Every structure is written in C-alpha cells, then in structure tokens.
Image (cartoon, rainbow, N blue to C red; front, side, top):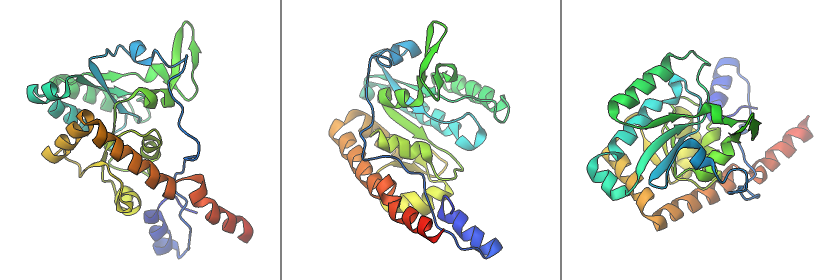
Amino acid sequence: VVINSVAQRELTRRNGVESDVLPNIFDFATPAPGVDAFNQDLREALGLGADQLFILQPTRVIPRKGIELSIELLRHLRTPENLARLGKEPVLVITHHAGDEGLDYLREMQHRAADAGVPMLYAAERFAPQRGMMGNEKVYSLWDAYIHADFVTYPSLIEGFGNALIETIYFRLPALVNRYEVYRADIGPLGFDLVEIDEKITDKAVETCLQVLTDPPRRQKMVQWNYRLARQYFSYEAVTPLLARLVEEM
C-alpha cells in the first residue's frame, strides 16, 4: 500500500511490485468542530484584531513548504489598492515549529517578511497536538486555528500527499496551493476549486484570492464544492471497499 500514484509507479518501476493507493482521508461524514468556550478567544490570544485577516500557514517551517510563496502572496495583497478592496489587513500565521532542519529557514522567512512589509506571526508556541493549559496560558490545537482562519496558504514544493490540504477542505476554507507533483497526479485532476500556482504568485492567483476574500457567495460555492468532492474521494467511506479487499486478501 502506498500513499500516492507517483510512489505506486516508482515501486513498480524499481522493484516490480504492484500496490494499491491509500490516500490521506478524513471523516467527512462528521461535521468539523466550531467555536467553543476554549477556542473563542484564539484570535485575541494571537493579537489579531477585527480589522485583520487570519491567513493560516498550517505547516512546519522547512524549505519544502514554500513559505516564501505565502509571503509573496501577502505582499501582493497588501498593496494600497488591494488593502482598500479587502478592508482588512492580512496577517500570515504559522502554527508549526521550526527546527526539524535547523532554524536558518525560519530566520530567512522572518527577514523576507520584514523586507516585504508583511506581518508574519510565528505562533508555534501557542499550538500543540492537543489543546490545554501551559501554566496560565492556553495552548490551542491546530483545529482551533482552522476554525478561526479566513484563508489557508499551502504552497508546498514537495508533499507525500497533502494532509493539511484535505484538512483545509474539511474545515470548508478556501486555499492557495502550489501544484506539487502529487497534487498534479492525484488531487488536482479531480476538479477541486482552489487557487493554484506553479511556484510563482501570479496576477491571476492574487485576483482569485481577492475575490474569495471579498465575495461571500464565491467563497461559499468554492468551499462547498471542495467539501463534496473530498467526501467523494478522501472520506472513510471512499476507501472502505479498498480496505475490505485488502483485509480479505490478508
């Protein structure tokens, strides 16, 4: 069993082994959680005001996540003309830790954001796999971040599949995605309505982001379509026949 069709082809090419693709899946039959007593103050805890847009980067801080593309997107969104159109100031919020591959990339992104005039909040200390208290301070879950986010940036250069992207769709959020190899092979062709780029922020991508952030019907149409499509292909129910066959064969 492999996680994507690219690995499936490579396994056959290199070893002559046949395999089945089992992608990232979510329980789409169960509605996503919402604002509750614990997470209702998340924006305030992060220092985000009512006049700011919560642009979520739900990834670790390592080079293959392409965070420079998220910064470039916000640089374009923050022109005087676009800020007037948005009516709010976009802020990039990073929820995961740096350090897996050193801290140089984090420092580079912080300098790049500062040079571009982009507010970037590295908030890894405020998030953990499970919500709870750390001393007198709340630590939120990643799902709490999705609940409050206005938009998600997912400009990864390489991914095994794209768990955070499926998570984004599960929470009915619009997103920008870089067309990494597995996305091109296994996700994009299914017809998702996402802001797609090819390792470059284009005028078209910026305009689509502006539309999604300022036009509620356009946003609703996008996220509802993506949810239905993901439920069809990446739900528990979608892979039940495959799992049943594999168990029977074993």
